Image 1 (cartoon, helix red, strand yellow):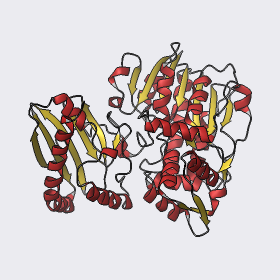
Image 2 (cartoon, one colour):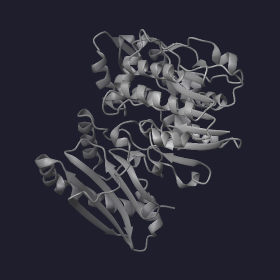
Image 3 (cartoon, one colour):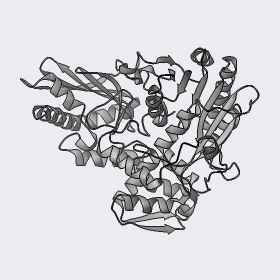
Image 4 (tube, helix red, strand yellow):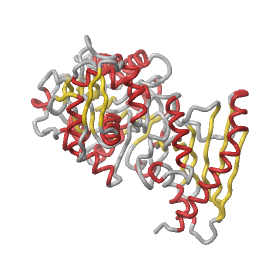
Amino acid sequence: MKVLLTGSTGYIGRRLKEKLLEDKNVQLRLFVRNKRKIRDKYKDRIEIYEGDTFHTASLHEALEGIEVAYYLIHSMGAKGDFKELDRLSAENFLDACLKAKVKRIIYLGGLGEKQTASKHLLSRIETGEILSNKPSLIQTLWFRAGIIIGSGSASFEIIRNLVQKLPFIITPRWVHTKTQPIGVSDVLEYLSQAKDLETKESLVVDIGSKPMSFKEMLIKASTVMGLKRRIIAVPFLTPRLSSYWLILMTPVPYRIAKALVEGLKSETIIQNENAKKYFQSIFPISYEKAISTAIHEIEKNQVLSRWCDSSAKEECDIKGQEKIEAAILSLKISNDFGQTSPEKVFASVLSIGGLEGWSKHDLLLKIMGSIDKLIGGPGLDRSRRDLYDLRIGDSLDFWKVVDLIKGKRLLLAGQMKLPGKAWLEFSIEGTTLVLTASFLPKGLWGRLYWSFTKPFHIFTFSDIAKGIVQRAKSLA
């Protein structure tokens, strides 16, 4: 079976890719905006086509010969009207599938009713309607899920951070709204089995575990974590205030927090029994089991993907960002590591940030991170997916990995709110670790920023380089 997977660098897509590769009867093809995000170890097992759904030539090429096509794309966070972009993307994809004589489209959207859905959920519903509006010409299996619980998912990160950080959790009054969460492992199982489902009709398949309110989800999560938490619902938390409250307490940015809060204002409950009827071998795990599994994966350093891996936001598309020749201001720090092996030094480089921290000045960096988040940046809360490893496209606190040559070079592009573009490069040159900060200022403010912060950067970057070398000496 020839299968095309879109969205393969996103949260669900990365995990579904792994699952589909387990099936020896599947010949997998990926359609991605940037092929550099796909690790080399996969390139002899899959076909990779580069492009996007707004450039139909590349889309038609990617769909040639395909029998089943997964649509895991959404435009929330992109520049412009994401609802209009979602509509155009879905229409282009459907038209291309029809021309390529694709037999089946599989789409993952969200639970909800059009009359009460938030703007984000309404766009996902309309996407499903577009993809399934030609049932006589192509079959569409449209899955609708509520809150997805798994290590690295945005919903899980919000719940985990609120429960772990706050003994008293202040929530808006619509925290009592019912939803039906589902473990990410079950979502993947439904999507994987869908390619082999023996039916010729188009279906809408609502999936989820038993109904519960967001308040119940917080309480049950705290029980799984061995914590006692009290939930206090208040009437004065508007969606905007609730969103700011979430970005202060959790790693998610304002746009995701806002989408979640608005989604909680209306029920997202299963509307049909097609999951039980057509997928009788799947028994969704409980919410508590999904939380426990997610925590276990984090503790064992087994997180395959995270909510901030990829999105339609401009900075998440790292294409071309590895080219730092445009930078006109730079600062270089060198540290000789002597007899320590270059492999250990580079391994130490790959473990920076996250829980490991950056330097002995982490407190100051955390203050900067809080300020950055308040003005719309990512801050330091995003941490990292893996304690010891990085891949192109990974988020790392303030930064995004845009180039990685094992043993030689790590290049990070800044995503913090700055009057210009920033890069941070680590390279091994002989027995020297070289740390280079590069900056392309935007107008006068950019130059003033660089001049003002340069002494601080010399101080902190020198400590970062020293810390990397010292840590390398202790590595096994």
